[in-house]
Length: 368
Image 1 (cartoon, rainbow, N blue to C red):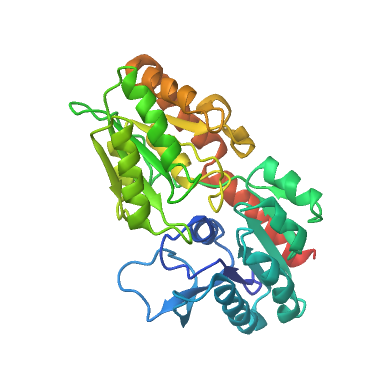
Image 2: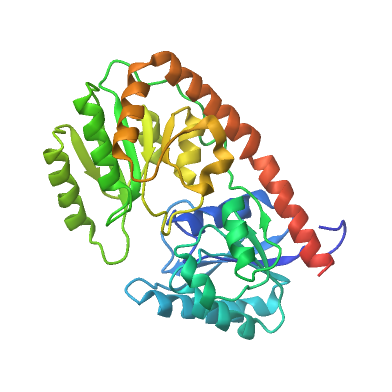
């Protein structure tokens, strides 16, 4: 970061290897690697390394054994040990880690293994506030929303900074609304109770009974303890009881950009955010593409303001009526579409994101 000086070495650490889009932690860590260009990043990849293009384009990958199948705490401890080895040659460790069930133990183990290497901790979200009682700060802490920053500060994490997430605008261009087909409502969330699927299906049932016509597509990620196959069958059974006929539950989505562009509306209405990011990247990507979004009114979404439509958490009737009105009013749809893109450009663009992290890196590397 100083002309003529050795480039600082930064170990970029997430909950898993950074060689695929696999949740909020890895997505946000990859965005950091893309945004901060004047440091040398090191990050973990699976062994054997997957073929094809890298998910993270910059930095030096270090292989570690595949962790699939191990309990979550065992995975995190193995990551901590590997990080301690690699961090011997690092000037800074940047951990991008959700506060989940494995974090309290990890937060006690990692600092003792690093032996004084400074740590920057970006928290994509907090799975359960009760976990904070058993957790310790890793170093300077960054949250994605003011609501989570206040929660972390109250739990003893000191002065928590807020850096909103980022969208690569060139990868998520504004696209016209699909025409000539039945409108598609795209649902994101998790399998299992309170993950957003059941809530969305019940809201869709309200909209359909009020006269709206649409296809319902659910793109759900797995949650520990809730097999996708069983959960998918339960969702389809609920859809049938709600009188919905044109419904599909997708497995892993290879081309999320195409799926989002094919939708008319994005619906994200979980009762609990759980392991989702404070502001899920798919929500921002949909807004960038020009797709109106309906959300459950969680405090973490306050930064989105009037860009999105919000219904009280768990209120299927209100959510369903918002959906029907949005599908039936093309002018309102267009206003929200343009407003969503403009908000992402203003608040969640790469230049602003990069400037904030560059400033943080400089402070930690040169003024610890």
